[in-house]
Image (tube, rainbow, N blue to C red; front, top):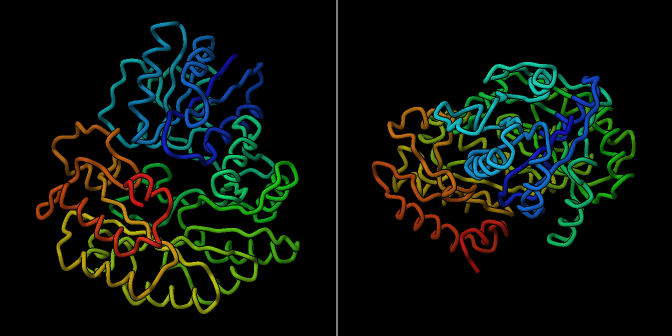
Length: 409
């Protein structure tokens, strides 16, 4: 069976770990012959992708919200050329959005895709398949050869001067922030990977491809605390000195765990602060306080961690006071990097559910901006102006990608 996996274009060079996980899973549990190929439109020419796809039995797309329409374009072209090709869509957007254009889609995979995609290969014909959530299995690692890990690392080295690879050690998130759709994918069920197995994979990837740093894609890496402790202690015990970074929720960062992170050569913590206004934090169910935020950044600097902060402008009840409070928390905590995005009501979030007109051109959205969101107080243009004010004040701290998207020197 020939299967082509496609990730439509987006400004994202990171590994397609979801697809790599599915590939490993079906290789282990599907007993028929498999001929797998993978294309990432960030790297691969569109015509090459279509040429391979039309010769396949199944073409599977992994789509986030901004890439969904691009995926439909591919599906349309493939179906017109070869109507016998089965088109399968999975990923965040189809899991969360009930208002889907299914014209060219044969089947949809909801949630985590490993088990559901295997069901399709074994004959499941339902239009909607899932949701099946998978535990971690020892030694069942992402198929990095399929997704061309070496190409991604070479790109990182060329663009950023460092070969950095991504890993996963948690599935799910215990939080229920109203602007996040994570709970649709995992239902807040957190599964933790064995630390030794994680380190085995990291060391294998380093030996095979040569990496100078790694990062975790887990949304709340420091939860649960016992797992964070186990990983750091195991990394230290194994004398694994590869630098690394993780995303962390303020409420799960304690001074002792941050010290242990540093001892295990964690260099960078990426914190989704979101807002410097307590009223906003409460409304979005962030579960943090201003004092917690200040304390965590203070600890980070004391310990010697690179603390980076990320913020969202234009929450539904945002006003001039909350905007100023967010500027002030940045000034007070002084993160090394400041990422500022305009709020976007993605499918699966509370605010998307409250929108009466759900016909949104998602191609006009990216991780930093969009052309459609407005609040009762601010128009979209006013939010963009405020974002530029942040960019001007904190220019030296902006991520390169944000400068590129916003065309800022």
